[in-house]
Image 1: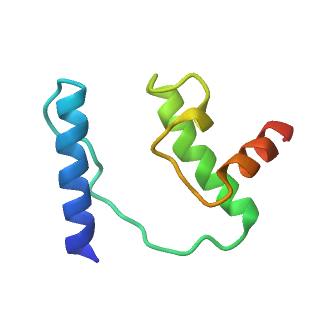
Image 2: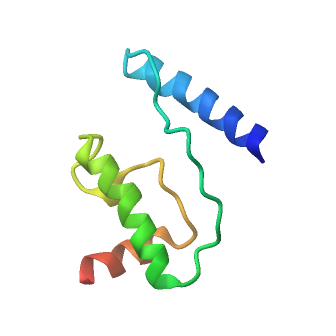
Amino acid sequence: MRGLMHSVKRTTAWEINRLRERQGRLWQSERKDRAVRDEHEFYQKANYILENAQRRGLVEYGWEYEWFWCPGKEELQRGMRRR
């Protein structure tokens, strides 16, 4: 798993930096592997990811972030708007 994560981070960091015309470190070195236990925890993790994209100015509304995908994304997005 460590080799796979390293490869994913290396490749995506290179491409993101190229597109943003930047150089340097992009990803944190930590990784925490564990299953999401329930729907509530999923919403917490999804919001964290999407709020990061919003805070960084990548999107105006987090759920518009094209690089976040999950099964049923549209349904979840509607659910989040109701919260």
